Image (cartoon, rainbow, N blue to C red; front, side, top):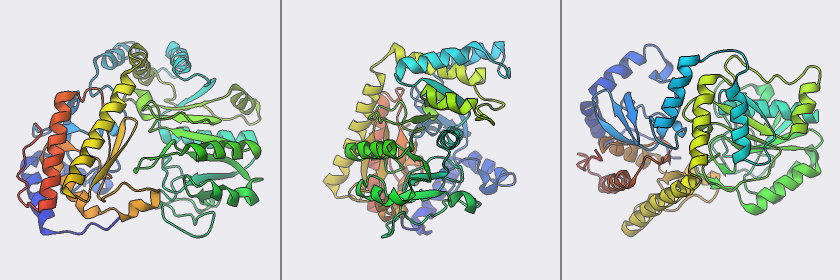
Length: 450
């Protein structure tokens, strides 16, 4: 992706953001005294200041100055039924009355597992934790305990949380040698951990042959059904070949569904599945699901696999998770409807941009979408580097002024609270902001979505 550089248009847009959200600007100045970079989350637009949220409802969030925004990244992708869903809120409130941090077993742990099995046949046993990162980490530890091997394979352009062994090659690049050179995505990554990771190109069946000299040391392959911020769907042929390769060489296949789980994408066969985000109903929850024989063997070993943690399976989070699963069971077609809505939105963006020859496009995968500052969607993760970061940065700023919040990477998710009225306003805001971005309109004179 091309480096963003300051420019007069960007500065003028930033001045309008400051004028529209002065209390957010003030809060950001205070936060920078306490937190590195002034924020505690990733991919938060910080120029000229983040949006500081006071409350949220349905498809909207409201900042400290009372501005309303259509939220295209609700809870970082953790909400399917919108902000403040009544059933989820009431379930949490009822549990808070009874207690929220027992530290002991409780009935919701059993209820959650039973609900998961009813929705996801074949998932036999679970490990509960508090985030997607932790779920993937535990899956890798489980694979090592089960196979007795150490090395891990991940794919370039995929994201599996912030654990040292997987926070590598998140931004894909092309190389001639296989496995690919390891590229840490963040500072402080353990060199020892990266030495046990092999990185391969995604969706490349032929490239799997390069792993043959290493199979005696590979404990697991971790991947996603849809990869990275570019939403690259795993191809059927690659999925089948990868599973077959793992079965032939005593390697466990970990399917990381932390982001794409419950979003209506194709189910992929694997030995271990991990979940997060949506499954928690907006509360912090990570889930590992696998076959009984894998967990049974590992819990009987000495030393055993460590499953628990202080907050693992706590009643407050599981009350929200159970309410979320109940909502899915009560309305089995809700995911399909949301998938359709997301597809229609992405197609509308593409039609509009193509009709005007704008260098923007969109792609959807399940209930997620991605906006790209390039004329055509990227074919492989490495193509993401060719996107125009300067144009995307300007579009995100203009959308904010128009009353829409979009993740700075261009990825977004919709909820069932994004009804027809919201979608009409959202598409209108996108069209206006795309027009203004391409026209070089420094005043950003477009109609706000609120």
